[in-house]
Image (cartoon, rainbow, N blue to C red; front, side, top):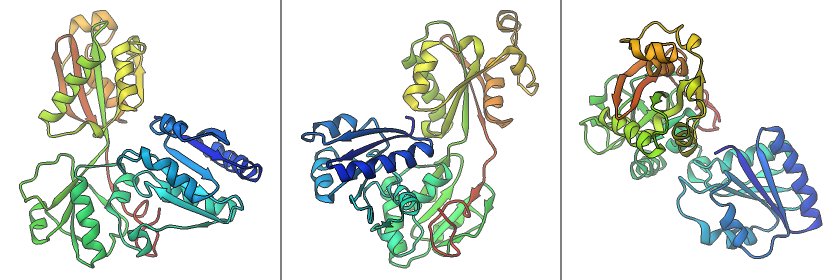
Length: 353
């Protein structure tokens, strides 16, 4: 889903403020929709799954009543904020962390001179928030219950173990205790492991965070349905202990740029679909094998591995070319690191949003 925001106002004064906010959001790269004096609440249910952010210009009570029937899950609900007509306060009401409402509130506050009213506990107490960390660093949060438990323990002052398979940059927050091996996470009642694949045998207290750094290089015969391609990809990911959320890009040869199944798969997963010419693919030499038939047909003998490697910026192969039912697949992983200076929480010494 592209970055789309919905703005809603109910008065002439609110409309003036809405136009100001529209300009700010459009300049930030968002697509902005706006509604003036909408009647009833049916409109919100229509837009709920179509936008990432909703900003009401007006009273918080109106926004709360309208959104109440739509609320499902903080991991899927859009960010919802309210800004008073006078532009004095901007208040995140829903999806403050995962949905980004807190970040948007801070952005609007800085840009308009309003005060951001942040009420989430980890922000109020200046504590590390694992869901914010995961979102900012592009990590897949594998277990919501464990994430909530970690936040609760941090708020009580407990230390949480932290292990990463990847290089760690910046200053680790004081709430986390780094260890040099995953096994040592057993010393803590709750812990975080940043790792390529979940499935450690250290008990149920470890929350796995998985990097979204995979490119899926795919090829197929003409007309293979999206569902078959998806089942093929998901099956191979699961066999490797990986998850769909780790795939950030789909890639193939330019002859398949308009292949319906591949296009639809990328759209469903909300990831880019990139293609390269045979000449571009041919610049990749580190492949595990070549097919003379494929080379005669499309100009290069191993499409999926080359596409995966190009799409990942020269990354390492996680899955070599595998084929089945008229489909081919390879997976490559980009280089990855955990950077606490980019995204943790907005208190001194603990990183920044």
